Length: 488
Image (cartoon, rainbow, N blue to C red):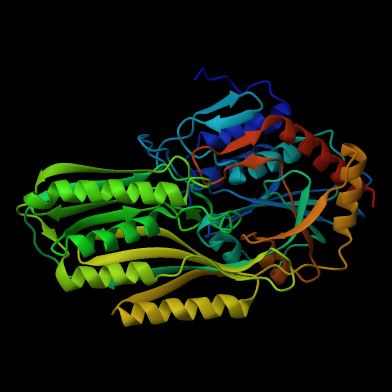
């Protein structure tokens, strides 16, 4: 593919800042350098700024002349991104920035997630703060950390000093859709102890790849295959035919909030069983490809002999059957549909990460629900399952649902400006995904919040891409909204 530079694309200032922050490694838990960039940006422009121990940055900009009586407005997005590389791509997300390029109307990253979720919000806010011509009310621009791993930054943020009446959250991916409510969520890390014994026979590496993956909230109800669960089914099937199989290693997924698009395991079997295992793996590939021909047409399942397993240790016998049973019993996918919102997922769980190393199996899941009671009920099931297998379940990053506000004054203004500029009505939706608006609404009494953004496709996936034309339209929309709020 011939890479095209993104320089000169409109809005020029937005894409310039997007490229600059994309040079900075900013995976979840590694956003200190990005935060320092924002602090330095504020200092160079004489803007009031504060950073806290949780990695959040707040930059203030006073209202344009004559707009001092308008209510303060908060612009908000998160610094961190989901880091996923395409199969066969080696990228050190801890130390290396992203290589961006233009592909027609889209901006992509070479072989990795783009981080437009939510780097475009960071770029938009920096462009607003850097503008001398834009008419705006007093602005509180909030750059949070750890959104992708449980909204840890927003949860720790001191909200007592904010004066904002309105919040424009810039963490949505569908142009013309104004989000006004979302599910709450919590991360669950399960650990199950396993015993290993000396292995023998021949090593076999089995790799499941090419699945569509996707966002664990917005895509959870689309019927896409979960690589870890298919691997669990394969393991169960192999054990029925090869009861002496030994499992040396297993892993799958990258993030608890991304549907796993790949998973693998390394097993050991007797040499005389090798050809049978390879044939059985091929049979399972045909089964999986038939089941998921529509949602995951790129699915592949491959097995390869690696050599002798002498001197290695694996999980086998009753211990392996126990481990296989745990994987089969772990919930995944849609658990309940909303009774109020037709066709809308109310409660779900994404089994996002699996790792079998040493003497334990680790599993990371993300629970989401519109109801606190639904989230609590599913968490108790996970605790019970862990207990039944002599393990433990640890919960973190709990954040509340964001409830729809009937009396919003902000939402009608946004819809009116959108229809004026686009010639068609906008949509208002509630989503089955986490947005930090719930935490801000809970921490700032009376806050009127809406989440919005330009078109981003395939977030949390290496195919993630940001529409250039949509970003240009959204910039014009955002700046017009700020003008209207300044004159309110």
